[in-house]
Length: 149
Length: 149
DNA sequence: AACAATTATATTGTACACAACCAATATAAG
DNA sequence: CTTATATTGGTTGTGTACAATATAATTGTT
Image (cartoon, rainbow over all chains, first blue to last red):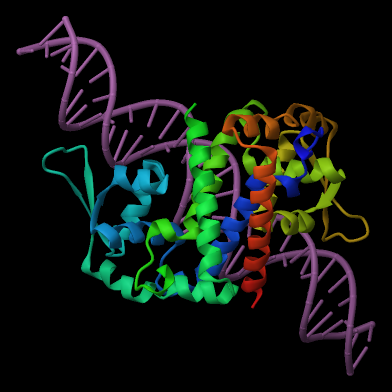
C-alpha cells in the first residue's frame, strides 16, 4: 500500500487535496464577497454573528479555529467598516464583546443567496455537498483529537 | 433541505469544514516540519522536487495552485536555506529553473516517515485516507472546472 | 524587419495565519 | 489580604496568498 512505500507522492497527500480544495473554493467565493467588500474569513465571522448577534473574541476563536493574533486585527478592520462593534465586558474586563451592527445585519440579506449560487455554479447536488461535509467534519474531529495528544 | 432555507449556518458550509480541516492538519505537521526547518508549503514544493528533481516556477505554480507572488519569495528563502537552486533557463530567459540541491535531497530521507507518523497519530487506516482523498480530489476537479466558467 | 500580443517572472500592497511573548484582570490558595 | 496561577486579548515577527502592476523576453503578423 502507498503508506508502506518509502515515499508518498504529492498527489497521495490528503492534506494537499484539502489545502488546494479549500483555496479553490475561496476563489469561487471571491467574486461574490468582493461585491460585499468582505474577505472570506470576515464572511465566516459574520456567519457566526448572523446566528447569534453577539460573541466574544474567545468564542469566535473557538468556533472558527482562529487565534487572537488573527482575529483582533480582522475585527478592528470590520469595526472600521461599520460591520461590528467591539466593547469590553463590564463584568469581566478581560472579555471583548463583539456585536453585529445594523449595517452588518443588512449584509445578511445580500449574502444568503451565495451558498445556493455556488452550489449551482459547481453543478453539485445538495445531497453530495451534505455527504462530503459530513465526511470532512468527521475528519476534522479526528484530526483535532489527535492534535491534543 | 438546507440550501433552500433562507440562511445556511456556518456548520453546514462545506468550505468552512475544508478550511478548518486543512489548518488543523497543518498543525499536526508543524512539529515534524519544525525539526526540518520547513513550512508546510515549502514541504509541498520539496515533494514535487523529490519526484522530479527539477521544475520551473510556472510548473510549481500549476501543480500546487500557487502563483508567482507566493512562490518567488518562498523559493528565494529555500535557496537561501540551501535547499534549491534558482537559475534562468538558457533557451528562454523568462523561465526560472528550480533544481533541488544535494542538501534538499537529503531532507527526503528525514521526511519520508512523516505521512506514516501522522497516519498513526490520527488512528486512521490507509484505506480511509485513500477513500477520503479520492473524494476530495474529485471535489477539487469539480470546483476547478466551475471556476473557469 | 517592425511591432503588437503574449508569456514569464518580479514587485508591491493588503489581508490573513499563527507562534511567541506581554499586560491586565480574575480567581484560587495560603 | 496577598501571592500564585489561569484567562483573555493585544502585539510583534515570519510566512504565506493573491490581486494589481511592472518589466522583460518571445512569438506571431504584417
